[in-house]
Length: 311
Image 1 (cartoon, rainbow, N blue to C red):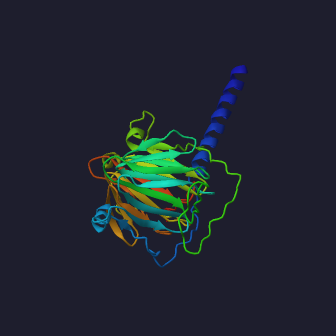
Image 2: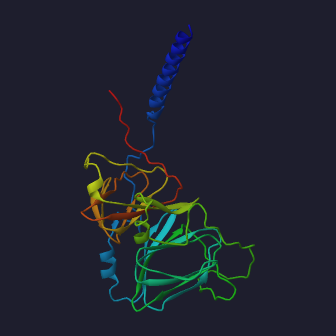
Image 3: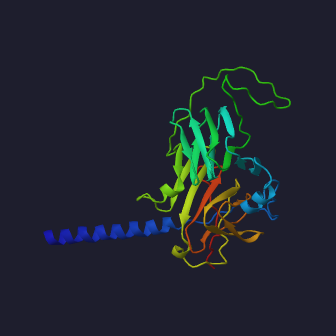
C-alpha cells in the first residue's frame, strides 16, 4: 500500500513537471504583434547620411589644423568628429541636465573631470561625464587628436564663474545658482575605459555597456565573423519604431545591410546611421576582430523583427 502511494505521488510529480515544461515552451513562443511601418522610406535629413567615411573627412579637411564635422543631429542625440592641434584646450564647463561622452580615435587628450584624478586618454579610450560635472580637456603630445563627441540633443552648456563664456549671438550670460551636484557614475558607468583593455578582461563576452543613461546608451559590440552563423541574405535584421541608431566603427570592419540602401561595408573610424523605421542587420566582417559602438536614445530600445507566421 505504501509503495503504491509513493508510486502515485511520483507519477503525479512527473505529470506536473511535464505540464509546467509544456507551459514554459508555449510561453517562450511570443505571439506576433502589429507594429507601424510607414510605406515611404525614412528620409536622411542633413547632416545624416547612411555612411560617413573617416577617410573622406580627412581628405575634406586635410589643409585644416582644427576642424569639426557634425555627423548626427536628431531628436535624441548629437554627435561630431573633432580634430584638434597639439595644445588645443577646451575650457572648464558642464551640462546642467545631460551626460556627454567621447571616443578617442587618434592622438592623446588630457582630461580633467571633477572628482577624478586627471588622466590621458589615447586611441580606443572612451570617456564620459555625468550631468553637472565640471570637465576640461587638452590635446597633448606632439600630434593632433581626433575624438568622436556625443551629446544629448539640444544639450546646454554652462561655465564656472572664473571662465569667460563664448560670445553667442542673441545670448546673454547671467550669474546663477542651481544647487549644482556632480552626477554619479552609477549603472556601471565609468569615467574612462579603453577598448583594448576591455577586450582582454577574463569576463568579457563580446559586449559591454559603456553609457547607461535614462536618455541614451552606448554599447560595445566586439567579435569575429568566423564565429558567426552562416550569412542569411534574406534576413532584414530589425528596426526601431521610436529612435534612430548609429554606430562608430572602433576596429576592423562591419557589414551593414540597410533597408533601401543596400549593403555597406564600414571601416574603422566610419559612422553608419539608420533612421527610425529602417531595417538593419549589422554583422562582423573580415578576417580580424571587429568592433562597433552602438548608440541610441533609449535604455532598452525595442528591436522589431519580421515575425514568422505559420500557414
